[in-house]
Every structure is written in C-alpha cells, then in structure tokens.
Length: 456
Image (cartoon, rainbow, N blue to C red; front, top):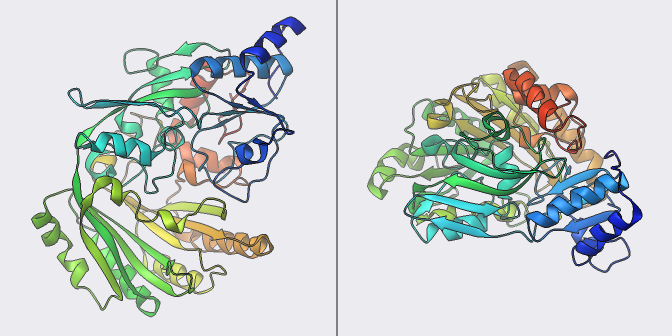
C-alpha cells in the first residue's frame, strides 16, 4: 500500500476532478473490461483504474494513490503472465490508451509511449525499413518486455530490446518526471534495462533501430514420435549458427485444435534469401516433416506467426529455466513430460541465446544472461477453469524434472506469480545488489512493488 501523503480534502478533490475522464470505478460499465489482462487466470479487482492519456495523468494518478494510501500497479500491454499489472483493492495505472509513436528514419530511432504493443511499433518502423528486437508475440507491450530484458527474433543480430533502449521518460514514486539515459541518471538507466517495473512508470521509451525489412521465417513441424530425434538434431544444428539465424525448437500441439502433438522448429533469418536458403538447408532437409512453411516475409509478419497460439483470455501458468547445454537428460525430460501434457494448448519451447545478446557485458545492463545457452520455457495454457490444477501441476512437475540440468538463471518476464524470492535473485543474478541500491535511491518506500520485486 502506498503511504498516504498529507493532502486535504480539497487537494484530493482537485486530483479527482483532473482525472474525471480517466478514472474507472467498480460500478462503471467499462470496469470489468478494463481490469482484465491477457492471462485469464488473473481475476483481481482494483478500487480504481486510471486509464491514462498522457504523462500528466500518470503523475496525477500516482498523487491520488498516495493521498488515499492505495497500492499501485502498472499496466502496459497487460501480457505479463504473473498478472502483477493488476492490484486487488488499489489503483491500477493503465497505459493502454497511450499509444503514440514517432519514428526518426534519419537518426534510426523511435520514441513510443508505454501502452504501445509490438504489432503497432513494428508497423510504424517497417514503413522506413527499420526494426528493433521486440518479442515473439506481436500483442505484447513494448514497455514490460523491454524493462524485463526483451528477448526476440532479432536478439542474435542486434541484442535484446533493453540493449537497444536509448532513453526513457519515467515518472518516479514521488511524481517527478525524469529522462534517464546514458548521459542523465545513468544509474537509473542501467537499472531500467532489465530491472522490470521496480523504478517508476515508463511513459515513453526511445529505441535504436536497425535496417530490417524482408526476412526469412516460418515453421517446420514433425510428428511427435520423432521428437527425440528432432531435438537432438536441433542441439547439433544450433551448436554453430550465424548471427543472422535464430531457431527455437518446440514441442507443441497442432493449431487446429485437434490435440495432435508435434515437434517443431521456428526459424528466423535476417540475411538475403539466398543466404537464408543455404543456412537453413540442413533443417529443411532433415527428417520427414508434416508441414514446412518457410519463406520470405516482412519482419512484422514474422512477429505474428505464433500469435494464434496465445489468445487473449486463455488461462496461463508458465515457468522457465536456463540450461547450459541440451544434455540427453534435458531432451528426455522434455519428451516424457510433453507426452503427459493435459491441455491441447500447452507446450514447451527452447530459446537459443547466441550472437550479439551474448557479447554484452554481464554488468553492462541489469540483464545478467549473457552466456551462450538455452532457455527452456514451459507455457501451460488452457481454457476451462476446471483444468487449472492439472495444468499448474504439469508445469511444476516438468520444471522440477529439468532441475538436475539447470544453469541457475531465470528469465524475469517468465516468472510465475507464485515464484519465490530466490527466483527473483536468479533472474537478476550478480546485478541484484546494485539494483537494490538504485531502488533505495529512487523508490525507498517500495511504492512500485507489484512486480518481480527488488526489495530496497
């Protein structure tokens, strides 16, 4: 709960008047829609929702929360699986209407507000043949993904989203508007690149862009009874790949709802079509796939390829863990676990960290995951609330089965709502103590604690 500020009734009334067109209350018709986020498993009821239109609204909403002693949560794109965007009984600052984007093609930069999604951002930058690293699902918000590190298809070529962040407009707990960058509030800027929503409300974010237009991408799916061979070939293939090429492997269900289990590759290449064809040839020629859909496409289309597998409102419970290598035991554990997956929407994904993302220093940003490695993600997903316990149990048991092979790291944006404090420490690694120092400086009362929290 936010510590109540000294403010008389007239002062509180002035704030509520200023926010009259912004505040949504439980009795309002828009309330139930406004409190929902992407993960249908999250069902919380804020006392107030401030659907902000700009930075001034954010400043006033924070002042109102302090005046009333209300806990604060921040909703950007609303995709974070843990559901920390919504408070029970507090004030939710909703940035979903703040969707301004400005691209400077000459400087190769873009500024975007905190409610922008990657679909919107990519559409604007693609007009100029430019892009930056931005997730794998286009409906994800730019702010939460970037502040949590920001992995995506371009990370081998151009690093994480956080590595391409140039500056942030940030509203602090006391309502001050700062502009952290490498030149100004450098300690805070360091912390924002991977430290999550611990330090304030990111109302604008500025990114470095790169020439990216047409790419090669797509899906290759094999029968599940060949899954062990598919994963073993993936291990061999990804042992040496160029920065232009990113391949994730997955154990997934067919998107037609049939429940058919598949072993798949998701491929992405930033080079010429000719180079992509040469680099991808071993994957394309391997085995007897039941589906191969790989070819040139605009980069924004690549960012939508798996959107349908993660529909808004589905119930989600995820975990992930890094492994230093895809040992035989990892592959066996994955295949055995997926055979028992209780939902036709559940799956497992291996994300390969290599290239530029691994060339950034361990302490250069708050993101410590800079060694070549694999992140095994277990996205449990289902529709019927009656199936919740079975799916949560499956994710947990699969995660536990991978424990003997864990490298120790956790990816911040994949932490579940019930992950303990040691998971937060694993996500921040050796940068945790420095992050605590920055937290003490800019948010000593821990106003921003509805996140994967850095306790000051």
